[in-house]
Image 1 (cartoon, rainbow, N blue to C red):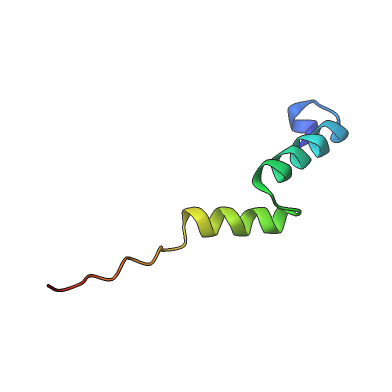
Image 2: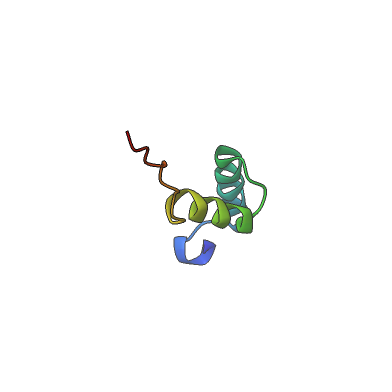
Length: 51
């Protein structure tokens, strides 16, 4: 990634750490899991009450 963006690997690491802090995760796997759960996993619908 650093080579493609023509920046230092340390800069990439710092940006990744900032993303982790903002999303309150501690690893790339945890970030992917959170993004999937919040954006793609089907949310349960509220039960419909008959009246």
